[in-house]
Image 1 (tube, protein in one colour):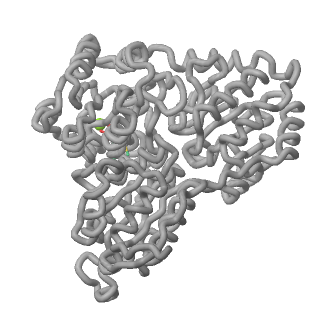
Image 2: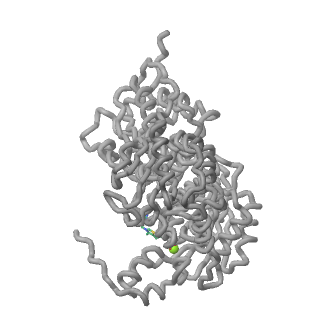
Image 3: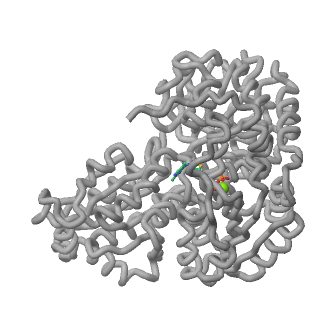
Length: 563
Ligand SMILES: Cc1ncc(C[n+]2csc(CCOP(=O)(O)OP(=O)(O)O)c2C)c(N)n1
Ligand SMILES: [Mg+2]
């Protein structure tokens, strides 16, 4: 049967439904009106979330990808929209998150004239996306969209960018729909698993590190069974702390920024390092110091769904191209190693973790350890989101993530991520409590999305850790240019009043004891809420103060970057 002619915009939206989409994030543009018009007819199946800035929309789509393992969808306009959305694409790339950014593009009749808002989108996104392309032929929309879903979810996951010329979207074509995509998940071979077992059986001080994307709760449970059966110590890579229950006796800490020095030593001294899903990037390796490149001292067993990641920096003893789910299943089915040489080591490493995360006193009336402990007690299963800044350290170090999908955070270190991520989390999982940690600097990069939270009734709790500065950068200034503070002070709005102006709830906390009641009031309100926690600016990390850093600094002024 010949298919009925449809406009490009309609064909596109029909493909999204074919591939199981239920939600898309956007800031509209006149460049993709035919797509918007097609959304009009499918509002009961596909929720269109209208945001206030494209970075917010793209970050929400990215967080949706992290939360669901399905591509987060985002629609923005050319030039100004695409440039603002690019931060979300960058995060999806660094974090290996499935996402598709659709961009309304200049009509093909004007292309190349530097028409209004024209940018060569495929060129612009080439280094940012896994695949960036333009659809020129209306009849090929089903092919391109199917490939976009396929590419975003296969191998090392990541973002895809598709440019949609205006005239291509309004033209009609009689073309059939694609069928639902099927992600390709590489499985480990039986001989891979045998070699792994052999290497492990000969080990004296092995350590496991989990990270990356493509995990499921079942895969996490499988890894837990594998770790229990073999008495293995397990750490989690930077901002993938929710892949192993932090309350479990085999969990020994996060291998990220501000790593426990004792754990760093364990990673360095391990004789077999089993890394599952993590890329072994700069932050996870403490600036490429925990392992030597290209030949690590440890016998590295690197398991990753992207073949290109194996041997990229570190030559593995055994590289296994496998996605987390089939790998974890195979690992859980391996025969246990009887009376391993490393008996007791996991308990020792666990004791180090407990000591590292014990209560710390900081200057000032607000004690952040107590704030995080309150949340550990009263909202243990909440989804915790954050952007970038020193404030995140309190959460990363002291919060016990209880397991799969309780952390949504950017390994790309992008400020402004937490608020949109939290909104996406609440929209996808309305039954869960969602808490965002933000810095005063970080929050105002996406604070306007509070309007989106109010509009779509997404009652998230945003905790702003306010120290009146871009604290991370100030810390580095004190380390390298002591006493020469420049460009890092912030004069902030009254955050509670700001929140109220949006129709959200606003609270101020100036003393630890005020936090719990403020948190409960926000939850009870049923509205999005902001809790501004005013901390002593001296309390720059859980371990030190600005004054101490300045006093200890040798003033080794970093040479100014050339250019
Ligand atoms: C989008 C973006 N811009 C700039 C930076 C560089 N940067 C990293 S942390 C930071 C300061 C964060 O300040 P704030 O949110 O107040 O957190 P604090 O460090 O004070 O706790 C900056 C500017 C970044 N990581 N991301
Ligand atoms: Mg700050």
